[in-house]
Amino acid sequence: MIMPPRLTASVPTLASLSFDETIAFYERLGFSVQFRDLGLLGLARDGVRLHFWLTGNRRVPQSTSCWIDVVGIDALFDLFAPLGVIHRRGRLQTKPWGMREFDVVDCHGNLIRFCEPATEEV
Image (cartoon, rainbow, N blue to C red):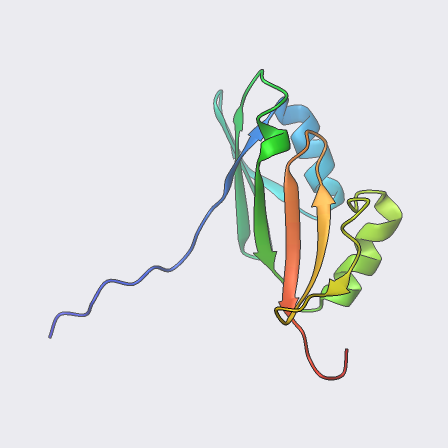
């Protein structure tokens, strides 16, 4: 019997104005460089991968975003908050759709939303 195809992962590809600046920012969040060439940068943390491409247009990263699923979102928020990277309207909240979320804006304007299903104890 042939198994039906299934999706197994997704890797957001976000815009960067400078790979050096992007690396410095995401290393503060615990990401490490997986690869870097002239046009593409790969970062990873805990099995989550983010790719970046270079652009000279400052508006592009300010118009992009991605979501990252988390286990332990309260602890992650507590790690990131002192770094000054939390979006001014992106504090940790339980949303009506049943997720606990917070937003980080990177050094070039990409919005990264961290989320975890809300539990009764939260």
